[in-house]
Image 1 (cartoon, rainbow, N blue to C red):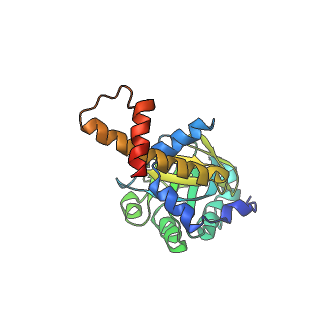
Image 2 (cartoon, helix red, strand yellow; image 1 turned 60 degrees about the vertical axis):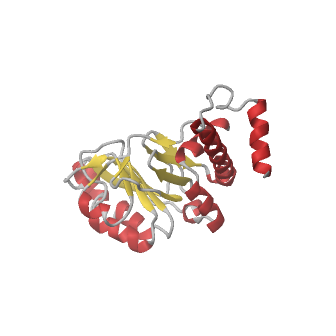
Image 3 (spheres, rainbow, N blue to C red; image 1 turned 90 degrees about the vertical axis):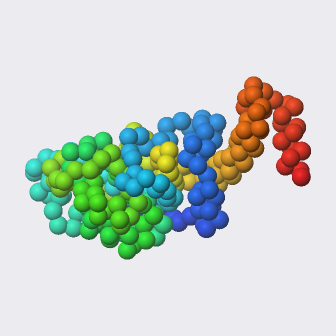
Length: 239
């Protein structure tokens, strides 16, 4: 079943996207934690290509465990998987719930190409990827691994544009997905601007602290900054 969720097609303003592209996932995770939101990381996934980074609103897809009678009804033809890849909008990230099951692919080269042509920013799946070498050259993907089998070995494509559980965290359509070398973070859309600004500010502060450490200063009182170091930092900012 496919439901209509306006948030799933809500793009990010260019200015906000630029901020999120600057903000590291570690910083975003820390800022969300300060606001009482801890379970925001998609765990167990790795990029097919090292150095991969992308940002975008989530377009969600859910698989359920394979059952032959259900696959007959839901797996063939123009199923939820194919509909999702046909519907993804420019800048969105396809997020697939596959229950951490890596014993088959959840996408391959043809669907990756379709997502690229549609303008998707990337794909996050807590399942496997087949045609991995080809997919790696088409579109940025985070997955739990690679596998040569088709999805029907383990999964039934069930529904799209719904809340999904990917890598141990809940992802709603329209949540902002940020992926970099540290992993994948899910940012609630309503907090995206606030935490992006805070993460960028903290990154600048941490860079200044790192410079002081490189000069030979001990971390005691500097990381985190005490009142004396905070005043020095403010004076440096004023310059």
